[in-house]
Structure formats: C-alpha cells, structure tokens
Image 1 (tube, rainbow, N blue to C red):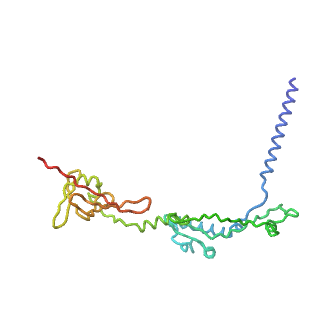
Image 2 (tube, one colour; image 1 turned 180 degrees about the vertical axis):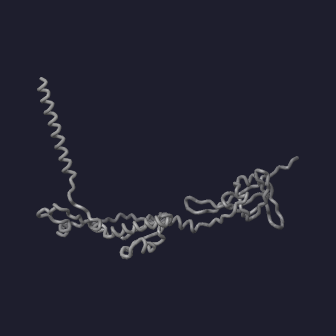
Image 3 (tube, helix red, strand yellow; image 1 turned 90 degrees about the vertical axis):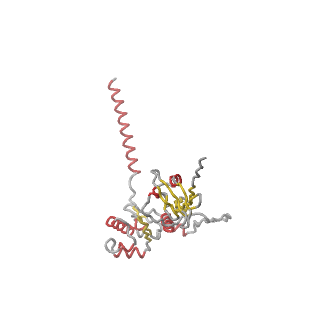
Length: 273
C-alpha cells in the first residue's frame, strides 16, 4: 500500500515539474528580443546636437551658478565650434528666464520612424511597404472638415502660447515702484493704531497738521506727505475731522500694486458739563 502511494506521489511531482518547464519556455519565447533597434538619429536628426547643448548648459550652470544669459556664451569653453555651428543652422531657440531657468528648443524635423533591421530579420516574400501601398491607390488619410458655424473668440482670454513667467515679470516691471526708506515709528504702526491715537487736527497758515500718540503716550506730528502704516502709506490730505492715507497693496487678480485710500477719522470728544 505504501509503495502504491509513493508511485502516485512521484507521478504527480513529475507532472508539476513538466507543467513548470512548459510555461517557463513559453514565457521565454514571448519575451525574447526581436533583434530590431530604433536609431535615434533617424527619429530626430538633431538628437546628438541637442544632447551636447544640454550637457554644455548644465556644465555652465555648475561653473557659474546660473544659466547662460545668451546662447553665444556657450561657444568655445562649453561647446565646440562644429556643434555650435550646427545649432545655429538648426535655428535653435534659447531663452534665459532667470534663477537657473531657461528654455531650449529647435524646430521639429521629425519624419517617419525608420526601424533598423537586426540580424535574422528578413522581409517576407510578397510583402510590400506601407509607402508602396499608399501610392497604389489607397484612400487619403486627410480628415474631412465640416462647417459648424462656431468660431473661437480670444477676447478676454489668456494666450496659451505666451509664457506665464515672462508675463508676470513684465507686469512687475510696469507696476508702480514703491521706494523703500528707513522705517519711522509711524511706519511700524498699523493704520488702526494710528486712528486710535489720532488726538487732534490743527489748522493754520503753514498748513494742516495732526497729532498722533502711540501706545506709550509719545506724540508725533503728521502732515501731508508723511509716510505712515505698514503698507507704504502716505498722507494725501488732512481735513478738519479726518486724514486720507493712500497705500499700495498687491492685487492677486491683476498681479500688480494697486492704490488704496484709507480714511482715519478723528474721534469727537464730548464736552464735560
């Protein structure tokens, strides 16, 4: 009885080993390389030139701490004359953005991908290429367009092909420049504290002035043109019962500094009876 069980167990093990070997061979055949290789120079003729230029730019950044301000800075030390001439002939587009940032591109020259045949790959008898088939009267692959009546209106919409970084930099250049001066005690106080400390407004022949006290009781004389507040505010006008302060705050929507007027009112003191 024991011999019979041993024989059955041996047969089962042999079957399992056979199945394992069969599936291993099947998987090996499916993953076996076909022997074909794609030549990168055939896909992109400027592939080698782009690789050299990219390496030269990275070397420049490593040596100087920033990207080259112009493409001609790479000539000589970082890029040989032959590659530099090839890049110019390929109409390379190089733009310095700043802070180690740049854009580098070339006009597309990409054509149909050609596959280099490896050893052992022979064309099948009677087989024809796709180009020969298309020339033998195959239907054109051009898409037919229909008139839908819809037209795109770009008014008020951002240009998707315009650099957001450069546009933001241009807005910052055209925005009003706030001149930074050494801060006075009034510039370190928020406008709410200045309004709470506004004690009096004086009118005279030499112009109107206001008296402001801080939390410690120290007084300051304010006149038109005095810088106050924590947002580069300046006193534009002083009236009998109020002070008009103009300060600049950045508008997140427009991306630039916008003037904002703030009114500081003088609290009326009731007369004691």
